[in-house]
Image (tube, rainbow, N blue to C red; front, side, top):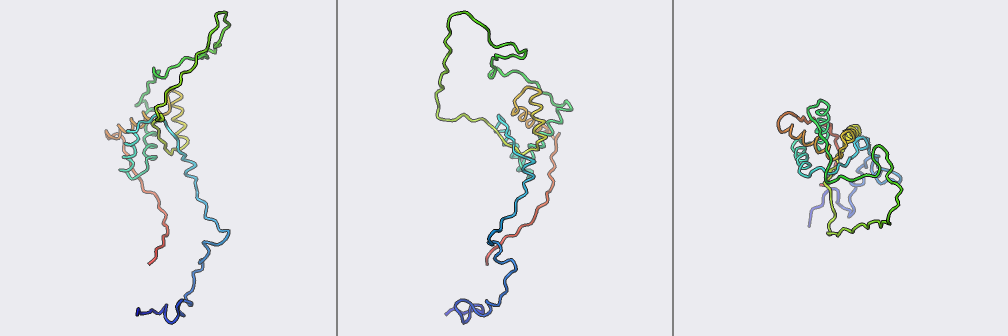
Length: 208
């Protein structure tokens, strides 16, 4: 027959000692009707919203992520440091952009910059508008290499300004900045210094 301890002696539901154990002042309040969990402060997420940049090569994104893992920081912080460094190099003219037309993306326009009309009166034989050929579906959706980084809005706006100034896609501007900064890091011209952040303690419960 198993030996009973002082808490279970004499009564099946527990002894007199169980009834005398005081309850914590907050016992039962977690499931109290009408109690709501505290609202999380999302000020940082609002100030650092994710921005999506298209046509950033996968290999370059993986190198940024690998460096972030090595430094024990997020990829967003490495990308931010690289993009800020690229903008600084552009301002100091140590990095130069040379934009040129894309031969694979060039199209005609009916409304040039001098605002000439895109139409004129004609008196010729009727013309049948061409029909667009349907592209055969290969069964696979065409995907574009893209990445999202949480950046300050001011930094994103500066990147957009550079893209507008050089009439280049935003993703290509981001790619050039990331690649330039990564090369500078490899050569030792750019140093990244991680700093510790304040960590708040939390409580976890476990049963014995």
